[in-house]
Length: 171
Picture 1: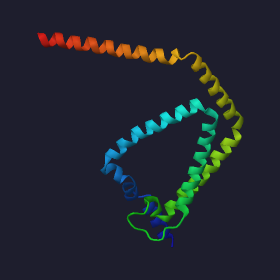
Picture 2: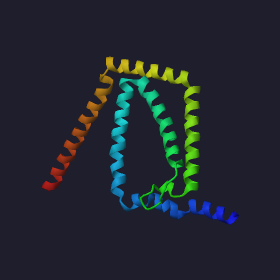
Picture 3: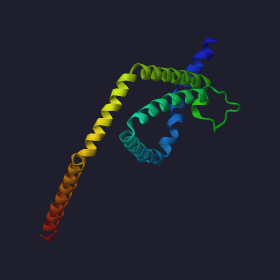
């Protein structure tokens, strides 16, 4: 019996499992490149939402994180009727699925306790973000002017770069 448990654990954490988990990304790296602009777009939307309605977005982020950990943990605990190639890779091995679901449940409880413990600090942070937004609305040149100066500097450098290239091409 000890050998079977030991074999199951070794099989669960073996390199074969890691290869199956990340094999599709290694074979088709275009998907990994597609994730970068999607992550940038999601972060841009979240920053804009935090700037506009800071309080609600931060509370929604906490709720989303807690529900995501709980939902993924519940999804991994649910049994699979028939395992085949289309089964989610983490659900193919029951020991791995249960251990990751336990980790997800622990993380969701930890996030809930962190949210409850630091509720006053979160409220202060939301007020600080609101005050910073009000300041930037009144002094928008603080954001616009450096961007404009950077754009002018890039145009200036490109002008001199192409001018130097044209001099070297004449010689």
